[in-house]
Length: 359
Length: 182
Image 1 (spheres, rainbow over the protein chains, first blue to last red):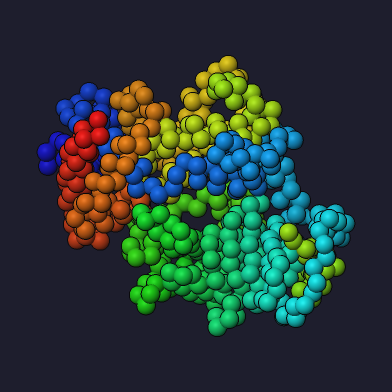
Image 2 (cartoon, chains in turn orange, green):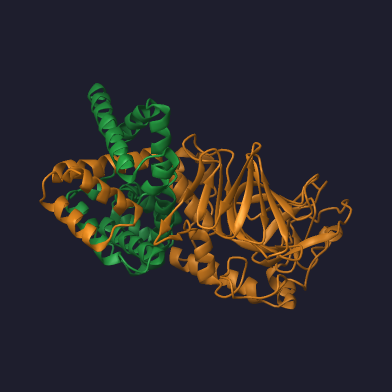
């Protein structure tokens, strides 16, 4: 092997994160002063450019996604008033510094997570007095799940409006749900499925024709923790994912850039089955499947290295030892914290516990 | 408005100013991350964590200082954390390579211009199917060289050479396109 070839291998290993100490020493030395240093630096630059050219997300999209994840809407509108004059009218100054807003959001999530149902009734879930009561024409359906942490909005099958569901609020088959911008929300379905929905996720619980323990993921990303012996399916427009006792993440976007996959499945533990247009694949721990592009896996010292799920890790950091995204060995039953204070579908006009009229 | 004024406004709670600050530096941060990470997904994660840390610590930042090096230092720390989280070893010696790469790029914060990105995307679209697939898996999907070797039936050395050959072709194509633009 010629020296440049060997150095290129070291460079690729660096990008893979698999470079050993000796390789790193040699690569760093070559980059600084060795033979072919200029050529090697050129490879780094072109590779960097290719990396960015392959990245379908725009800078604005990434910044917008960040603020949405922090529960702060309209930051970019405020930054670009000339581009959106109508939005300028909505511009407002933060009441507190951005850091305080972030901390307040985290604090609010912690409060939602730990507050008693009575506490929730008393304040956090109070109905907006300016919002007209919504008629309740919808037939109540049997609950199939409930909210364990955070809050989301749900629209029962046949209803026109979304209503807010908070800690302990019930979810029924056919409910369309959306997590909004206020960060991840944790729900439980059936007897053994905990789900973490990232901000901006939209889904339907047990849609028509689907198994009872299934959701249709319309956009966004979820992390599922399915206890052994339970079955759970995620349906998307690009394919379905079936799990029998595992932990995995699914993200889906119908509007993904041409260079980006719409459906991405990452398995943290166990095995899932992905059916993408009739092509069935088994995706194992440490592997990420990009629909239409096959299974990507990373190994180090013979052990699979899972794709990092930053939003799940962040949730874990904020909710140690509990939740759908907890590590194995923490937490116990699937219904922890979710059995009380739930509201029904038939009384949305009353703003009953756990549910309040939405927009 | 100067960057220092933007910082002061952001510190006072102006979310538009905070967004403008992050927008102004995201391209440079993404370029930096692209030099050091093989996966777009990892780069996005590190970028989001960097934004979070920057806003969380903004009140303690001196507006008289340049914002770019400060947020780049945050980004570098986050990259190091990612490496530490991914493996129990390697953070220190990978940091040595990182420094060597940055020494080759004194203007590391600049990012790449839109013309170059457009031209390169156009060149990448003209690659043969197999090459295009390999590039897509490597740069967008974060596939390791070993993944690619298994998928394309090549050795690790074969994948490295193929990627290098593809990059050489793209470099020529890019040079031609950029010359035409100028």
